[in-house]
Image (cartoon, helix red, strand yellow):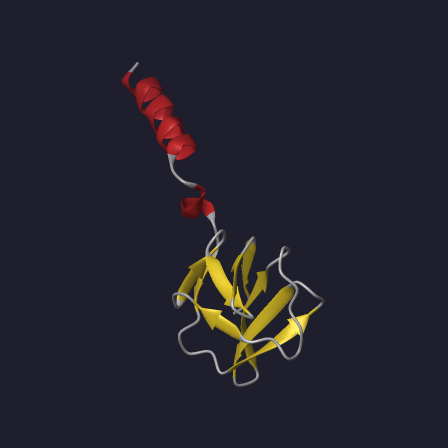
Length: 96
């Protein structure tokens, strides 16, 4: 009986925690450059090693765009500033 209660409580906690717990996150504080893949995806690099891919579907990213991180440790649903417009990061894919 106690085991069943523990399982139910564990499921309840997992389902009520914010999506951040299950999201990919990456520390980009040491990135050296970034490259655009399509209009809505940016790949951050250290030298020639890819760190992470950020999918930002609601903002257009151009080769001349300026990109500013609001914080160095980014996760799904965090914000990033592209050409002075705050945009939502929908998906973070860690690449290392």
